[in-house]
Image (cartoon, rainbow, N blue to C red; front, side, top):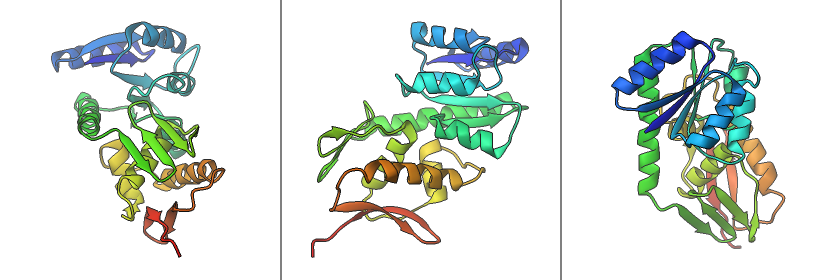
Length: 228
């Protein structure tokens, strides 16, 4: 597995590269946002450790650019731990978020959690169809009535999780654990934000046989609507 380490702190970058190579990974190092995007296109890494505070382009800008063309796993790394930064990183498509200072063992554990999640997803069917809804998790294409819906990576994964478990109620913590692959201790309101935007996009199209329902005080479910 090839990991791209993007961090302008040379010592942190070198320590991460050395530790991950000893753990069996191939690594590539970059030190600013523009270089990261260039190397990403050239090397096609399997996972990216992406520092937020980098010169030329910050990690948020880099992540947005990557998400235009790729669903490669991204772990965002920052020296600051404010909730709004964590939520922003996750909402623009990061798979995980870790705050400095961190232990090398913690980074490795996060990487392995993402690998396990990806392996589990690859073992499952990647096509889901229900009435007028079509989803392909290999390409992250979602269609309603044959029209492509422009969902983000996490919006797609939330819809997939709910739709593949029709009528099952998921708490916010359930969804965070399922989608980020470990116990996320941040603000669960990030799920509410994703659901709000997801509904706004879906509700532009008719879907009378199903809907995403809120279960007050619990969470959300993909509900089949019974014909009257």
